[in-house]
Length: 390
Ligand code: RFL
Ligand code: PHB
Image 1 (cartoon, rainbow, N blue to C red):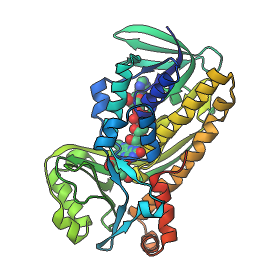
Image 2: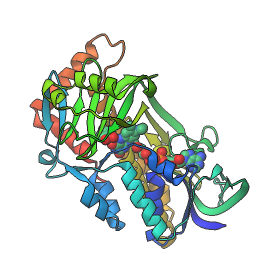
Image 3: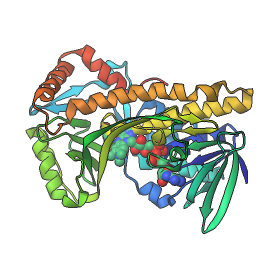
Image 4: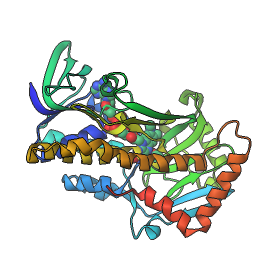
């Protein structure tokens, strides 16, 4: 089989890229290790920048997000027993973010792909990119026990942090820049109304907490937990007790508890691979970089990578020019490092570091007070939170 582009991974990066290429008349196949249900069952991101939403709209997929997505023009910072609103819209000339689950984005993209008759191979095993340092790359994989090969002009690794694409690169081909945080997030999803209309980011001596949501009847909460925390050591009750301790008294009194639809632990880390290209293999989304979730940027970066890469590949076919694909890595990485900066700052602002002697603690409080006192300080946060321009 021969295609123009072979994409590994049917997460948001791969699906969005596939859809953009399909709309440009470029033939792309997606190879995914998991089943469609497994992909849809992963509970992850919830906050989308307007650039991400605009891409869905451009692809004719705006209807569901426009109907069900929640527009948020502010967030709250909670510390020292009180809450303080950051007016995202007021500080950015009317910009906002949209709360719409990653599972819904994935569902919309999967449905569009199926409706357009574009091929996704699910349950593909041992997916291996080959010969991407030359002009004739191939991807080998196994399906139901049979070995298969696809020839392509380009291979895109959109297969997440633990994927096969980056792992296939020769040693020394890319540099990795990494920071592993000494804590994780314990997440809980429950069908209860959110504690507040807007997201609350909590800085508390017992650890960070985040009150988010998926809809007016579905809440998504997170607690900072030790790096080696296990979800099965917690119950919904112990989770809600701990969340209430970290919230201000007024919010704690309003917290509605309920059974957990999902509880899971996610380690916090930052990782950037440079460059995001080796020969005819490109990395996009989490395969190339991950950021701590505090800034809500991972999925939005997957979307901007897909945008830049689709444009570059389209230029290659339409203009017979390699300028776009040659520039992809630098263009994407500039935006990635902006998000790394913001995500690292938001994490440092709100998380407790074990063994810290009190200096960071005081610095956090000084930074938080500056944010609520000074519009200039708050504007920087707001501009980054709603999303840097493409
Ligand atoms: P994904 O979603 O990991 O998809 C990769 C796909 O590749 C498949 N795959 C393979 N397929 C074939 N062969 C292989 N060898 C393969 N290995 C893997 C996988 O099965 C999968 O289907 O990566 P992608 O597409 O780059 O998307 C990235 C986002 O998923 C991620 O950045 C976000 O979820 C991060 N994130 C958030 N981002 C935001 O923009 N806003 C948020 O509010 C937000 N909150 C979060 C988050 C991530 C979290 N966790 C769990 C890390 C909250 C949390 C708790
Ligand atoms: C989420 O709703 O899952 C979410 C929201 C904001 C973040 C991270 C995750 O910063």
